[in-house]
Image (cartoon, rainbow, N blue to C red; front, side):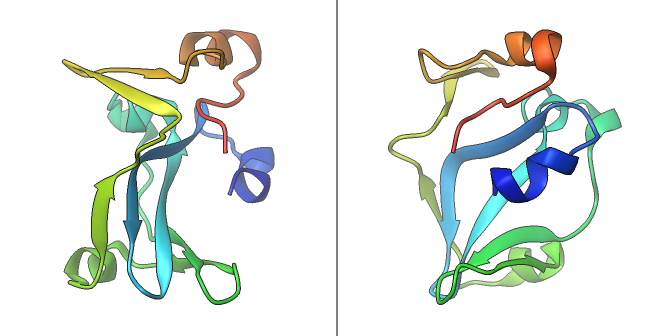
Length: 116
């Protein structure tokens, strides 16, 4: 996902949110977007549009309309036992120890907020 989207990302700090595993039998659903929207909930960085999926049969990346994702009762969601984004309660989120923090990422190179 990172290889596909991060090089051309232009809005805020690229973020791959892996706190939940979302899937059905056909594909995995990924949450990608700006850190400023996903974590800080800054509406200026929200991007409307379809959800990003990876098809399990061949690894192909695709797009599915969010309405279709929301109404698909075959999609399951569960906590990721090993996320790179960690929630601490009260809206606090950080990365796995030893990785670049969001603040460092934004101020240094506007790079990653999580690792693959």
